[in-house]
Amino acid sequence: MKLTQENIDKIIKGDKRLISRTITYIENSEDDKHEILKALYKHTGKAYKIGITGPPGAGKSTITDCLISLLVKQGYKVGVIAVDPTSPYTGGALLGDRVRMTDSSLLENVFIRSMATRGSLGGLCKSVNDVCSILDASGKDFIILETVGVGQSELDVAKTADSTVVVLVPESGDSIQAMKAGLMEIADLFVINKADRQGADEIITGLKNMLHLRAPEKHSREIPVVKTIAASHKGIDDLLSEIVRHREYLETTGMMLKKKRAQIENEVIEIVETGLRKNFWTDRNRQILEQNIDKILDKNTDPYTLSETLFGL
Ligand SMILES: Nc1nc2c(ncn2[C@@H]2O[C@H](COP(=O)(O)OP(=O)(O)O)[C@@H](O)[C@H]2O)c(=O)[nH]1
Ligand SMILES: [Mg+2]
Image (tube, rainbow, N blue to C red; front, side):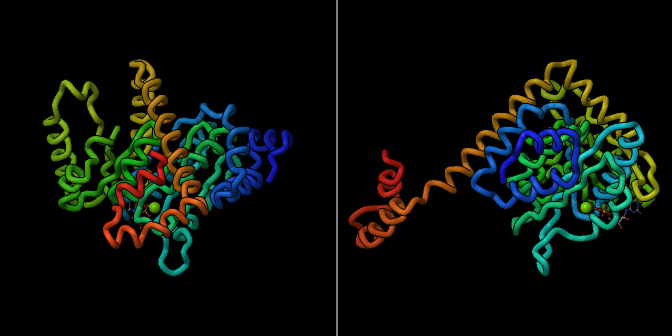
């Protein structure tokens, strides 16, 4: 695929079909994807990235849907990347989210993309940064990244997002779970969704207590806890206000610049590691590996020495 100037202009203007085609192309990891991303990169930098993570069923998609309508009503352009667990039956992203988001996706200023995690549990897939860049270049003011919080994926979303929202529900044990999973450290704000259920106030109190127990010198900003009933669009205004406040906090304290630098660092490391994995096993290196297996078996050499040989050390 060759990205002509005409097509670049189309993407920048938000041409949905072309954005969609470009993302599909990049997801399939074609060899020349870097050329496309390079051409688009100078047009990025405007979008504010909101990560939404939390356990399955907490209401992340419902909240995302509410945020989309709120942002679009305010005249913003919104991109959404929903990373869903791979369905064991189809190997594709679960359909549920897409169906529910249909209303919003009809709106001209919204672009929604579901991505499968390709087998790994939760986890942001490798091309999320790439897709983010494409949506950013296409003039989106906000990009919402929805990911199921399973292990590593929360940490990944926190590395990519400007504001990380952790969604919990009143069910017992959730706040303790949050502590364990390291969610405390990555959350820029918490949402207690399904506040129509019993125990919402208790978990809010519990969570606030835990947040207060953290070392104050390390945390100059109080982490807000927002109560929502996303199913009936309640509390979403508050959530958006808190996101906006967090953004202002990052900008006024100079932390935004630090965050951007960290994001760039992380992105480069990821590109390099992907490249290494892809390019390291040349025919020659494969051959060296295979030729030495018997030697290792006979203890004439060992895996460490062979690795060093492969690295050319
Ligand atoms: N009672 C109640 N149910 C909700 C609320 N928000 C979402 N749900 C429901 O919870 C289920 C899971 O929501 P979903 O947004 O798909 O969760 P996700 O897996 O975190 O994306 C759906 O059936 C929603 O309708 C809420 O505030 N209260
Ligand atoms: Mg969802």
